[in-house]
Length: 431
Image 1: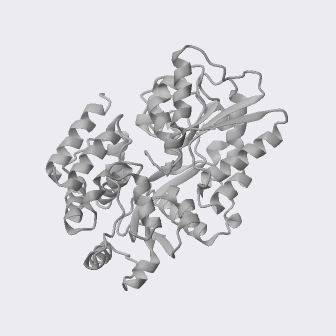
Image 2: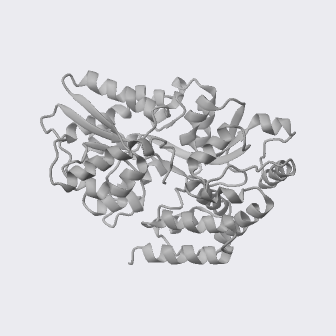
């Protein structure tokens, strides 16, 4: 998923641009193969749960490896996403890098031969004993770059999923109870509209809008539907009952004022800030916001899973990958192992992340317990349905542009679904 929790993206764009310019000139002074430097890239914000945990992991790594320094470079998510093939095929490749999971991203790089096969290391370190279910799915890719089976090319050490964040103070102010059914959710939004409040924080220019729509589809879908769409285990028909319900309901929500028409040009950051500032009572988004909301929200807030759905967007978190040309692979493996240690996993959990190998008794923060408890509920019923942009390369941009048209009313739900079908069919691997 193209999550934009990475608020540091714009700030670090120039750093990556500089690396690319060096690559284009055919030289690099980055990469030491003497085993004294681990070159690490990730794009987690410093105040996020992952950012805090990885900072501590760096300290732990250096303490366990006297004389070795971690050269950490914070990179922008979008820049890594768009330029990874070029960077990883150059002398500027890091030893270890956080990268997005899925067929269109890590799967594509594995297929291109740019990532190290980690299967032996996974067994050697016992990582496969800590990573299971839907979290494990995004770690392995077959020869065609399709996730779910084959060799291990990535290692996630946290999980993520979507939920409804809601402003308890605003709900209380207007006498609205927490919704537990789809009908109650609709009723709550009607009441906010009646008070002149647009209930849903939204962002049409990035992932938020398409995730609302995908969740609506998931509420009418099952596991086989997800496997057909994400893993090509059957034909995907964008005019089926689930997709049709999603597109027509989303368009109807815009007409009813649940979603603002002006949100078509907003970014994910805008949606998050709208919730933080108490302007929007509801935001449907991912656990990557949790740590920030704990820090910045000045009101009472809570979360709940999407009412009436057994499935929701989610998976293992972004994955550690080791570039094929990495110069210090053994150091990279050691760092991954540290991030999966109880110490770092427990820290991650208490900071508002969703750890994959924490000690439940060590998670003491009440909100963190709820976050992890809901994830365990989802995982226990095989409820993680991945993300809508994963199946084919370039589909994210199609989803953004087409969903914007639904928000502005410039495209009908039927035409919207036809456009998605065309782009999807063009990208699905031919068998």
